[in-house]
Image 1 (cartoon, rainbow, N blue to C red):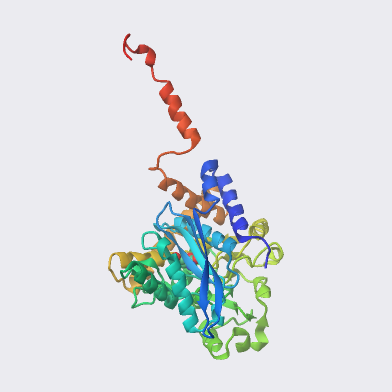
Image 2 (image 1 turned 180 degrees about the horizontal axis):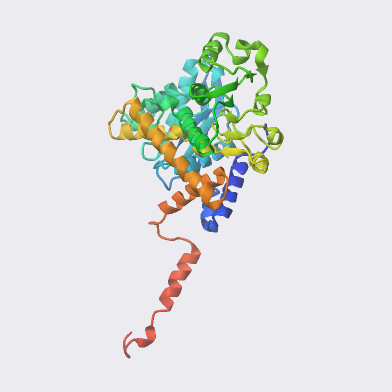
Length: 439
Ligand code: GLU
């Protein structure tokens, strides 16, 4: 894993886009820092009776477009810099996919697999209680992320509702279906990425079958791998946190791999003669590489060895700024996370909307609306990519920053320069034409 601080790395990409679009310095200064950071020490009573203190975070990066929105991640690697980076990316992502949300993110520094269900519930409820004064359907709306799911969102909503004394399903999204969750939310991130890739394949007139390596077999990796294998792509490598497997010649039946993993515990155990490492997977000679696990996996150490022609970033921030530069030089087409994985938050928006309006949409309706959103976001990014001759990431950032700027049009200028201009205008009033004696 690269040592580059993910937040610093994220800001390098912001600065690049800002330069290309000649963004005013005063706006850039605001976008380089989060609006608010919350850091918590949460007491967790273990089943053994022992007390452990767990670090918790919520970063509310920017709310120009609406309530802060973004997931909660439970992972031992979670720290303030990671959460800041993730909250920044949510700001850009929500603007790219044009949902009325700002960007936020949170997390706990914990491996939930080491906790019993009761411990996980107690910890989640503690987190919700502590965050309650700073979240809410119109303030900040968390959702699932790495190692969190519908059950955790349901505990969060329940605890928050107790604190505010009113059932508030819209305080979180990604809830279980039947408990205020939207149909189609679980598959949405993977499906959104699939729609984007299909658009790109069409634009580039690529011939199927195309070979794909997917890193990560969680909610995102699994669903996109499934869709790809069922729609004319050859999935030749898969991986989970224990390692990868590859079969360049025959590929994998993803549904079969899924049930084998369930039975044997890991993909490696399911296909012992096809084992590779997670690092090797990234360097395979494939048409499309889909990193769908954690950030920073493609960095200055391995970017030069990537052989894929297209990278679809389904994880958040899987490529560091240094890695990105190398891939650009190699002319590898990178579909950035803020576009590729925006299907999740798009359907989160649909869920929030249904909760706020007491509606329930069919799965068909959700998927249809998701497709429309992904196709139009792709078209807008593609348009800027062509018009300004910039890569997809810079194009997506330009689109997002423009939307953020547009949202500020109604706000009074606060910069010193603007105020000075106003007083200079006042000074130039034609006072000499006033009648004598008038004051
Ligand atoms: N965690 C997801 C993401 O990174 C979804 C966030 C949400 O639905 O608010 O985009």
